[in-house]
Image 1 (cartoon, one colour):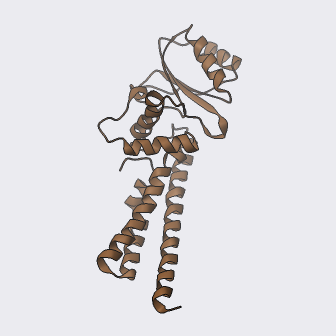
Image 2 (cartoon, rainbow, N blue to C red; image 1 turned 90 degrees about the vertical axis):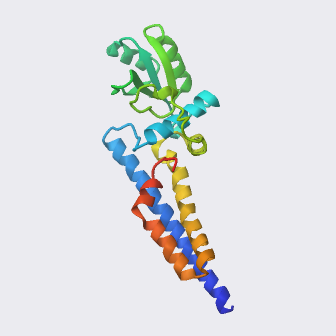
Image 3 (tube, rainbow, N blue to C red; image 1 turned 135 degrees about the horizontal axis):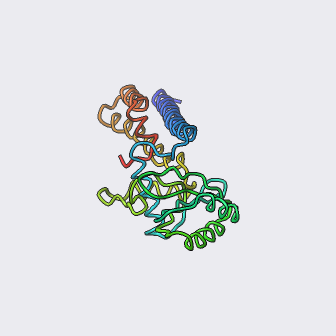
Length: 232
């Protein structure tokens, strides 16, 4: 094996290790944010995920008529209503259909969030609920954020590609905060790789290209942006 071929193999191994390290740290940050939100009983959204994930979910439901599901084959739905609810009677109705009322801490929108192991039970629950209160909308999947008219928000002021990728991730993996962030994690890893390729083409220097992509991989801003579901 000549020196040039050996050097190329060493560079490939180094870049592979950097990419693996990059993916691990971005995934770890995304997982940590998910756990922190769950521990504080939050709704799962970080920063502008409120808008981008909601619009991706709404695109799935209202444009493509696909209802997202939760991990472990569970089903969730955020019920948006108008009027007054008798919460004790609502809990009794939920129990009748083997449904859990998980979250009713909404202030900007009149809503509550339910989960069940059976999607038909959720639909039957909603149908009976309509006899008691005006049900304005039902958004399936993970609980919606606390924002007015969020069930109709499509984020039309931004191009759709980023939202399509988030929606695809929800469709493939299920509707869960960690899985919203998979496209950002993957594209963050690709940015590190492309940084190496561009620097190598410009400088013709392997060491400089490796150093450049390593600095990109450990950059705090890159780590933050590549660990949450943003359109950037």
